[in-house]
Image 1 (cartoon, rainbow, N blue to C red):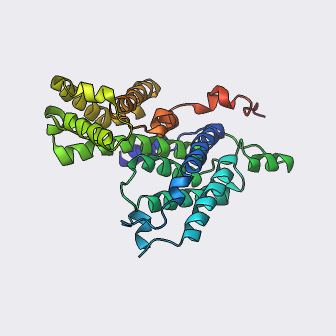
Image 2 (image 1 turned 120 degrees about the vertical axis):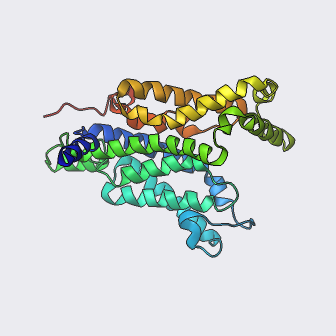
Image 3 (image 1 turned 180 degrees about the vertical axis):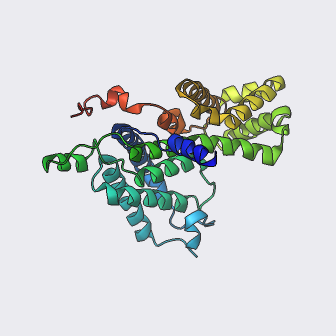
Length: 302
């Protein structure tokens, strides 16, 4: 019975999948990561001379901030590796190299002030893709292989397990967030004014500092009865995230609700989470290779 259960788990975790789906995720996640690094480049390079250096994660090995030249070099290197990752150029090297560079650069940035937990899923997805065969098709490597007459890759479990891992990372990140709420606040998160107070504090702080805040959130905190149901819904959304792994229909429902949750956060707290709001956090749950964006890359199988 144990062997039968183990085989069932193995079949579930390592399904046969087409290489195009993994390649589509490489293009989507890699493209977002490159754009994210490019847009945040002034911030990544503007840390010289700032106080409050408290390294976290992999950056904890540093006793002091890096020299300015090293900060510039690591950011530029990450950007170049990101382009190679996305285009599928020397992916066996650029895949893991970019994943590690992205982890390092964003962790180093988090050594100053707030830790941006919203970047965690992006980094985890990049690490999973970088250690997979996501560059086998729809890549510069694949183009060179075709010119040499190489046999095109066919669907296999080698492409299935990374897809399952990516989906597990998405679902797991939301589930962990729900567990963290229970550990920190218990069920009081759903029954008290914790969420209301947090929204009021966040918007007031931003208003006093002259930052962009949400007038809608400031108005809604006047209606106390709204917030226990909202807090309960957010908690259930996170704790029930594993239902997205049951099948495509439940995955669509859960992903839509999770996307709506982030839209609500943007509306009432003026906090924009680009990775989930652009749908990329939920991309591993779907057949993204069928998107119109990839129609020109699609090719008939031989």
